[in-house]
Image (cartoon, rainbow, N blue to C red):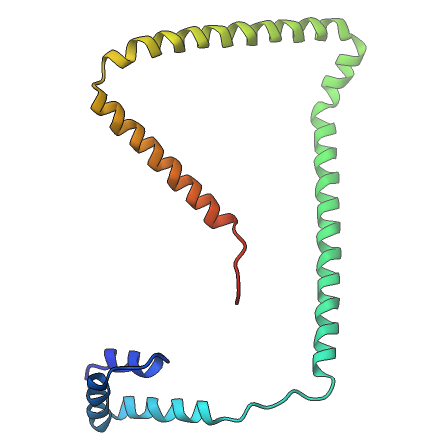
Length: 174
């Protein structure tokens, strides 16, 4: 027997139309499963709410505060061990380099200046290549293609922004 719309009507707390009500009543007369579902719902709604024992909320709040304190302590010690381990690993890897640097800083300073000059000249070459491409490429694509490309980039940017917003927002309510 098909139960799907009737289960939805019974389990949702939303009101149903009179026509749906007639269909549901007719179905309940012929379907023991859905009738049992109605009886279970009535039994669950008629149960009287029990009040907590004396001092329950105070004990619960004290236990919750203690658990938070233990969790905070554990997180602190974990972070401390993580940082200390990272510093030890960093010292292990950079130790030989630092010893060589402090024994002869002139060669390291010369290497650093050489690296800086290399970085600056590389950036200048990339800038020149990029400016050449920006002058040449627009002639290869029609304006419609540029519009489609720009729209696609804007759509991806919007999707990225919305996803970051969804992942970083604080949930409200229950």
